[in-house]
Image 1: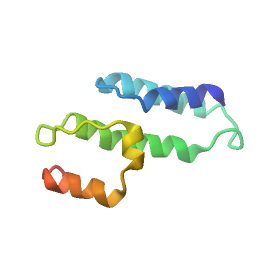
Image 2: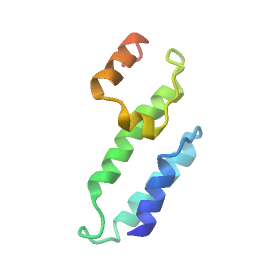
Image 3: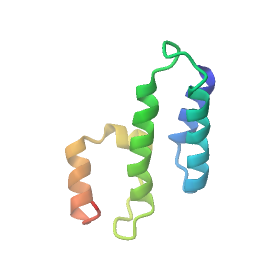
Length: 92
């Protein structure tokens, strides 16, 4: 569905306000309930939510002042991300 895709595209933009991000993702989740499973890939929604949790943690961390975008995050390899979090001891 185009509406869900648009909401996910909006969610991956840099949002410093976590309440807005939660509202966008809840709206996408609500809309997802009314779509056919063949029309929309639910794995994209799950991946966006998982990645936005990590990005929000990085953006609002007191230790690691590293703010990266979703596009940069997709290009990062998981091992590099773990090294970054370990370097700043921000992995709890």
